[in-house]
Image (cartoon, rainbow, N blue to C red):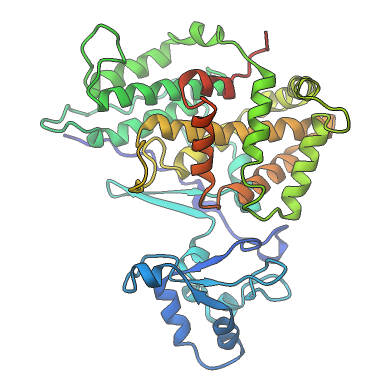
Amino acid sequence: MTQPDFIAPQYAGSFHCIGSDCEDTCCHGWKVPVDRDAFMRFQNLPAGPLRTLIEENLEPGPAQEDSPSGKTNSAFAIIRMTAENHCPMLSEDRLCRIQSEYGVEYLPQTCATYPRVMHTENSVTETALTLSCPEAARLVLLHPNLLGNVAGSETIPGPLQKCEEPEGDASLRPWRGAIRNLALTIAANRAYPLWQRLFLLGVFCRRLDAILASKAAAYAGEPQPTPAAFLADFEAAVASGALRNAMQSLPADDKAQLDAVLQLAGLMLHKSNIGPRFAACIHAFTTGIGNGPGATLESLSSAYAAARSQYFAPFFHRNPHILENLLVNTILRLRFPFGFEKEPTETDHSMNRQFALLAAQFALIRGLLIGVSGFHREAFAVEHIVHTVQSASKHFEHHPEFLKQVYAWLVEHGLDNARGLTLLLNESVSM
């Protein structure tokens, strides 16, 4: 069969580090992993102050025990942070001394590629950006046309051209390109409000899971469709607006939504350093929803709804590309809806799980932005959005336990299903 090419956006190629002009530093608050190749390069550096500094601040990583000969494991060693949570390799002007003195080829792989996140699929390499970097956040969020001819289109040429039904393949692997492209097509379809595009992605994932499990749940009482038939039908349904009436009738609940945002925001409070930028973000958010003595969930949710309708919604109505870009970049960064290589301890490998993670992360960032808009009111502007997204991304996304905790929380609260995830996302007026 002819495998459809992945849509491979080029925006990440425009990224350039702004060095000491950046308002944050890449490595503040993190442990910096060192891959084995970089570790060996460090051993061959000439004697001198920099080599001594490196040797004094390197500690063994888990990869030395798990796979001593592995060259691709990025945690062969760890650079120990200072008491102020800064990398000891930074100079006074906040530039990396390793790169300044020996060049980028001496950097650990993580440092050399950050903030880029690269995946190769069907010989196509696609690159997203992690928005914990302020300059990457600006590039992604403010880009007027992130996906080229795809972004902002109400109807897009389908990803199924030249596809044929494979014989003897019960998996969805031959359809990965078509599936991922259709997900991006839905995310960029401004004929729908953004929360409805997410709802459509959820339906899409649940039906793909049903096909993968060879069940007839996707179309009750009818034979399970082939992947080709399903993708063509779903694409046509999105283009025609067939599901629009059902989405418009879904109830909204500001109180439950805000409660979810508050609990998601609190997941990492005791397991991740709270930097000054994220502390400022949380202050703006809590102030913007009226937190203070005597505040209740009812009063907070009322202020939250007011901030959304008075400041958040009008701003993003004028600038629809910003949150759309956030969603598109997250789809690319997380390899949605396929995810990363599954861990042996995971029991749920479904696409619905990938959607739940996507939806929860998006709902968390959007909820923080609603509160921040209530803090700044009419002055709410792009710099506040970049600050919020960047600081929250840095606080949450790079912690290895974050996604596991998010999904465990969703399951514990019964929100890992269609109803629960719709509750997180719905921006309709509360009834």
